[in-house]
Image 1 (cartoon, rainbow, N blue to C red):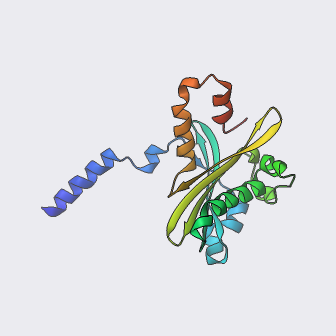
Image 2: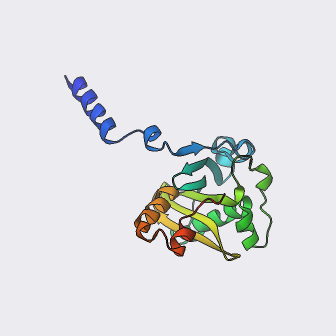
Image 3: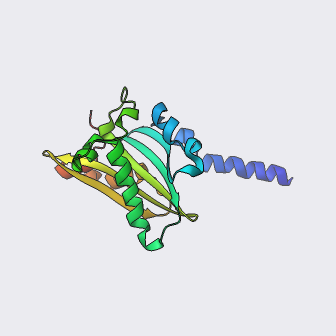
Length: 190
């Protein structure tokens, strides 16, 4: 009888909390073979403090997100600075617009398969594990009238960058015709 109750509860939970496949039907995993071969968490294991978890294209709104996991034993007073620094570093390595902001060349650009999507649209998301306490950050470049600025944010806990950005844009929807909305909520340029 207890087993039947558990099955019933489980089925109810599936109805209430849909699986990620149906929830994320607008998300495509993008194969980045060269990057995964060098930076995937399975490949680098304990040898590096940062590794690539995923590269995904979201279609509504359009966004191209590369998610990395960083880990270490950091001073808790420097966690925000370190998390944003990782996001800045990886964005500079992958995104030519971020690299241009620092007058640098994107060191890993040759490893990015751009046959489907452009590297200049990459949003870098960092999930930092500091002794089993999690922090999140994202960074992407924004070019307005030929001037580049970097947009970033930091969070205590695991926060999905795309879902956060989507939520912010949803909250701004009433201003959808404004120049600021179009600049802040256009994450992928054709």
